[in-house]
Each structure stands twice: as C-alpha cells, then as structure tokens.
Length: 117
Image (cartoon, rainbow, N blue to C red; front, side):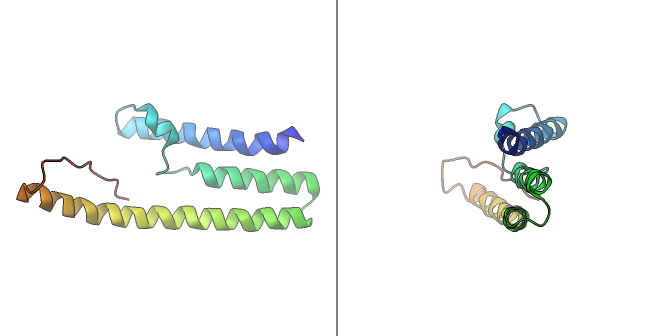
C-alpha cells in the first residue's frame, strides 16, 4: 500500500531534481530552484501521472479508481501547461511596464526581472 503513496512522491522529487539541474546549467546555482514552479519537467504532472500509473497497475486499467485518477491527471496537466503559458505572457508584459517605470524614476524600489516563457 505504501508504494501507491511513495511512487508519486518519488516521481515529483525526481522531476524537481531534474528541473534543478537543468536550471543550474542555464543560471547560477540557487537552491530555491528545487521548489520552483516554473519550467519543465512539471513536478505536479509527474506526481499525477505516477499516481494514475500505479493505480492502473494495481487496481486494473478498467477500474473506476483508475478512471478518476486519469481525469485528475488530465486536469492537473492541462492547468499546469496553461498556467505556465499565461504566466510567461504576463511576465513579458510586466517586464515591459517595469522597464518603463525604471525610466521614469517614479519609484525608488527595484523590481525583479520576471520569467518569460
């Protein structure tokens, strides 16, 4: 029974670790990237895919529990992809606005550069 719980958690941890090393190759090494939401592979998607897979293997591919887990996986994966796309668009627009604010010297605060994907 514990492998039904441990498999998705392990899949999520592996995805986050892979994401950390991918980001470390492109950016400086920051341990906050271990918990990052952005980028691929998606830890959320890895977890629900592993959950659906282990339920399918254990309970059977035609069980109602497997059907529910697949529907949950489709919803999570669709939302993860959609959110990343919209956050990338918003990041691009906000970076333009922040650049314009910096030119005006209206505020004394500095704003971070947001991710654009």
